[in-house]
Image (cartoon, rainbow, N blue to C red; front, top):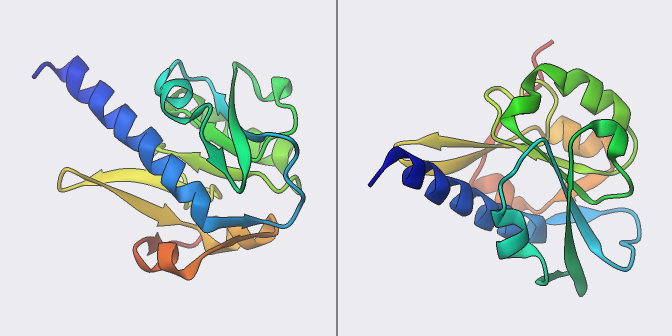
Length: 156
């Protein structure tokens, strides 16, 4: 298997996991007509092919790709790609108090204030969750997901 193929398989698996994760999160705001997942700085087409058209909480999933945080409109989930790692703090500032679940595979994402970080250990994708960041945005993660995740605190 080529390394490009391996990366594509990993990307596909991460998107599938994100599709499962969102079912374990509760938003304290009404979800609009569509359940929106916004993808920042990524060309990972698996978001559209695997998630768009499915439904969560009785709402169809809509996937939106943006190149800058300034293009962000109302969304339920923001996936932040690795190419945005230098902009994390400005991204967090721009979405503060908007009840948006943040997910990324950026190293140290949860410790830097992100909510859910996907990482690989022993060839398995695992989760790090920052409960403080989740609570600050008035979201709730079901205990069944918390039990299988590593909980982290924000490092200042």
